[in-house]
Length: 104
Image (cartoon, rainbow, N blue to C red; front, top):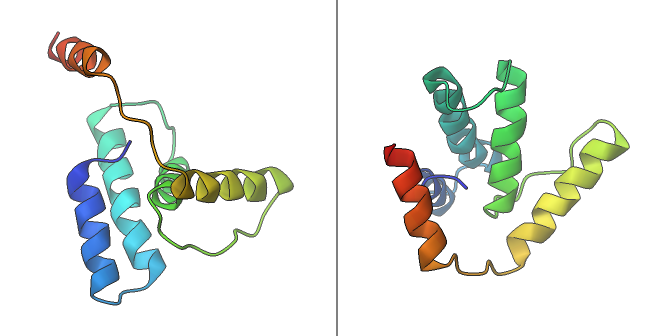
């Protein structure tokens, strides 16, 4: 799940009429930042870009269809579909548990 600040920056880009790739760049930027912090084990910048674009599609950025393997196109379609369906609200107990886990 992308950070709220990232989503807000991407929406601001959309309001300003900037291209979808610019909007998606905010998500890629966040992902590269996570890798530099050591938050997760993506091994390369290419992986960070792929994760960022996936998050952007899920957040509703209207990116074009990717050129590549059938699996890649299927994943992109799945991400677009996920952006259209409303998210279920996270339970309070789970939310508190994850916050507590991050503190330790």
